[in-house]
Length: 428
Ligand SMILES: NC(=O)c1ccc[n+]([C@@H]2O[C@H](COP(=O)([O-])OP(=O)(O)OC[C@H]3O[C@@H](n4cnc5c(N)ncnc54)[C@H](OP(=O)(O)O)[C@@H]3O)[C@@H](O)[C@H]2O)c1
Image 1 (cartoon, helix red, strand yellow):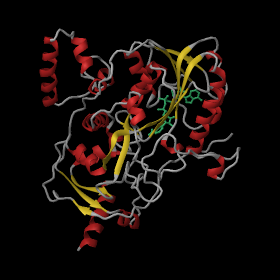
Image 2: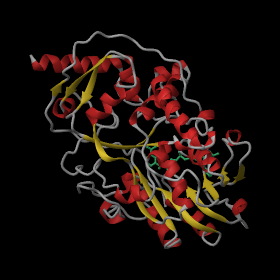
Image 3: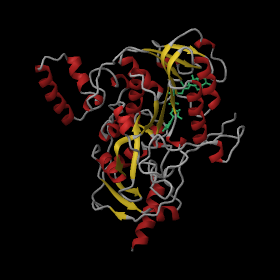
Image 4: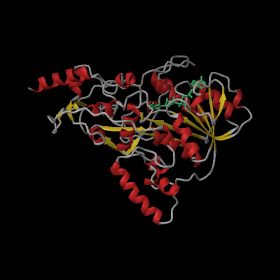
């Protein structure tokens, strides 16, 4: 089976009314902040996120109260982890042996760190190119293209397959591991859905098949079909012992694609920001830590089934997203809402040029309107947007200057200014 999975960028033109930001015209300044996000404090047990002075004071006050209740400092710090805010246990119900196929890219390291923090035994399987990342974690060396020998003779409670878009890899691994693992968690994608027009969307919606994609086995597989095929293969080989998680856009620190990062960075630069579409257009995305922590808890609980990995529970309008990001900066930023018709006319595309934003045009109504009741019941929790935005900015400012200057998503400052000028001219 060949895979030619490449872009999953939606490319839809929007038909929505433009609006102008009521706060337009405020003075503009430039903000530079020292980075505070650090891997080392991600799961240190002291705090897992950067905090503003105000947050810190609030947490300290609450923590003193908890200490007065006889809790240890560790219990207090654990109580202020985001999961605790949703009433989830901070203590794993059981210790498990976890095998992560991959583990050293973007989402893998978060799975590893959280699993370790929960006291689990973690083993990685990969080709070893990121071995220095986890010197104290066992890494079995092999290749998904057929060399799985290092996995032989071992047993695990949970295997997480992070592989991107090769159903053959899933088939080989699931066959190899089916008698030695209790649960197979496959990281799929929202792109697996063949039809995103239902509101609300649930995990029962149809996924791509060769038939619906108009392809036959042996063809290059688009990403969505590769994910859907991989899901079916995993469920066929390990029936009743498979967990499918379909994330939407995964965001937060360490994300190298810059698709969400574009917005905090752009807003923190200040000035007039081109805001796409209708302020009410819904957005559902997922902080990489919310996603990966939940995956480990699905393993702790032995939860099988199909789930969506997006958030928050109630879709967030894009205006709330952009204003919420602005709230964590001190930049003087204004937003000018430019309607989708105009953006389409001047060649500014949803998602690829205006990352995160995919308007609910006919056929896409459910893209960011998932009913997440089963996911929340199974333990998915959501960090506040402020935490994600702040940590993303801190991550960004910790990168080399050349990387900071060359975002891989969104549009350039010059292009944005050009589009805004054309939009204002059209309004006159
Ligand atoms: N980013 C998003 O917004 C988004 C949205 C929806 C779904 N997803 C899905 O999320 C997952 C992202 O995974 P990730 O890349 O962050 O996972 P990861 O597990 O952190 O990194 C990929 C791992 O695969 C290993 N690997 C690559 N080629 C290999 C081979 N031939 N044999 C053995 N190991 C190999 C790499 O190590 P070596 O190079 O050392 O082998 C690396 O450890 C994907 O399934 C993606 O489709 C992403």
